[in-house]
Image (cartoon, rainbow, N blue to C red; front, side):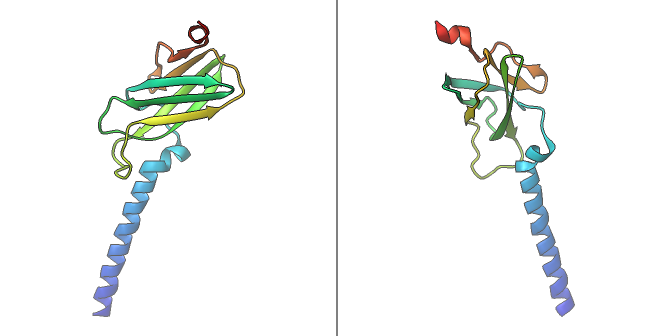
Length: 132
């Protein structure tokens, strides 16, 4: 009887640990293993650049995707932003909207979203347009 109880307990605990591991890797694994920037169609509803702070608000066109984070880099006078969405994991707090604030002292003239296929044209923000 004790052997059956131990076996059942071991199976239940192993299953719980497996589910938690899959959830954590699916939700946060991209931070460790990387990703190739935007995983779907994203759009920006508000962009502001003031005193070294870039603020972006937007969402995804996919109704099933859940926002989990972003990466950025400044290269050749351009700010490139990749937004990470998760389709399978992320039942808690499932929302496609993002509100990104980036503190940077580096100068740039354009802001672009970056997708798996490369840079998405046109830029979502341009210094020339903001000075007019």
